[in-house]
Length: 182
Image 1 (cartoon, rainbow, N blue to C red):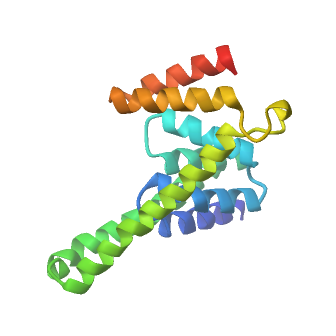
Image 2: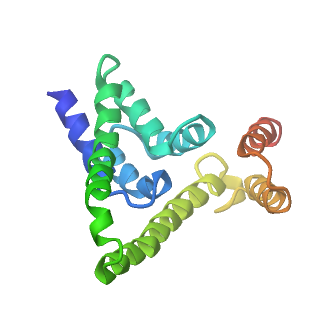
């Protein structure tokens, strides 16, 4: 029965996620923390690890949480639940899109999905940014912002804008700097 529950939760997340894995973060956060499957801190750590491993972030997170809940089949149930809606939807789109591609209402609906996806991604970025730069429980003497984390964030963001290298380099730089500075 736990497999069905895991599958259904991740099916819902996959079904209502428009815009890719980053857009899924607000719904993943709500669903996973409200059930006590992960804490906010675990969620932030999972985002960091999922971003640095191959594959889509949502599927990586689903596999991790499912395996955490039940090592035998939880990861499989969560991953299948996360992937199934996309497979169903893309098969339907492939079947019917040719007939409706030039339809104005279809084009308007697709145009409305872009700002919705951007808003979801923006909310996820804000959530992670606030928690990554402000860890009052660990650094109460610094107040709301943990200044070394803010400096590291600013330096890596500037470096990313100036030099469009592979993301893995920035992840490695951040990890090493975190060990040395934070």
